[in-house]
Image (tube, rainbow, N blue to C red; front, side, top):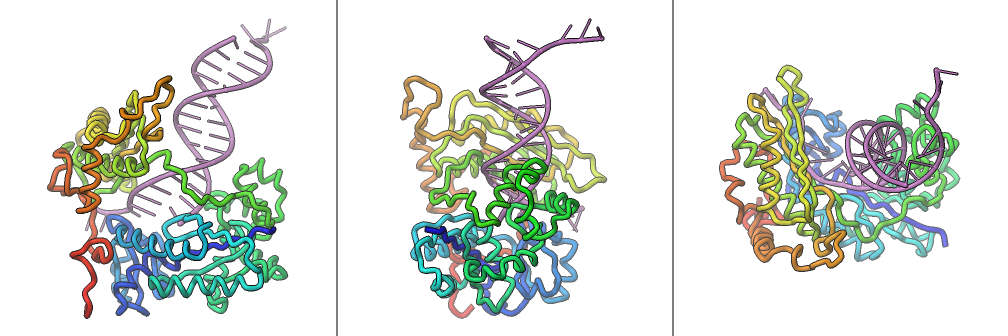
Length: 424
DNA sequence: TCTGGGGTCCTAGGACCC
DNA sequence: TCTGGGGTCCTAGGACCC
């Protein structure tokens, strides 16, 4: 039976989330900013029409966008995460064979569904998600993930499709559709390879599909070769219904203001360790090494630059926040140099292993690496009452380095005291 | 003054071993 | 002049994704 996949992708996801709770702004241009109000990461269609570029540094475009009446929102990840979960829930009610690919995308396996009613089915998905969450989505249907991505893209760009395109049904036009897609817009082709492909005379999706696979493999790698095969309708990338555990977990932030004292850096590193470690315990893993890194602003060429990192091997798997803070601070101490204005720091937990398996020992002891009651209690309380309710003293309270969020919307769906009020 | 954050996979080359 | 050959493991860096 030929495989049938759908890619469901939320339109302008972050911007759409904000609009759900600010319906008055419907029809007006809005943008969503990255952490620290750094740059623009999402725009609604009105902002796109104004020509506001994705990725633009906010401080550079703030004035002009204001003139156009653009409303800006700071990143509100709690809101987006919660809205995402609602969307995915609805998709799962259509079929359990779904791979949640990112915060705003999911692949669905529709193999076996009658081909002629697939477009209709896609429409129902759009309507149901929109009704249930207020989020608009597009659906691309095809035989491989890469082609489903193509279909989704075309559906999104062409309103006359109603947001749904079944590539199997428009096969006659496939060549012309692929010709219209620039090679850099194909899933799996980034900026670097797009450039290299262009200089080899391959400029659009059709030319990539028809390229010689051996040549692609030699000049690029096996990953791009798979992309070519997928464009031909030959599945190479499987669906993953159960997401694998993360192999590394990172937490890093740019600071709202430059840091010049080690005390503040220590505080930040403690906080990041706490966040990363809680994430790690949530997926029931232990780490075997922790990396700390610090950087001055790499973009500011006028300032003296310094960046360094330190990896501390742990000897045995660990998931205890206190212990990891100790190691992270030790690492920080060995790389810290006074006299610089630090812009960013981060903590990475490496070589993650399952919590209750001690690797390489003859007699694994399960108790030793299970979360301690203390860590469990800590996680429970912070889960219920919000992160930072219960914390290590080293995390501090002042947090002068905390990121800028001057335009943040409330946590409408995840905090009781920030629920939207009727009449607002 | 101010430019995000968090991941994965692949490959080449060096270290090391026999 | 001329200094083996083959295998494995690890790491850093480069590419990609959202």
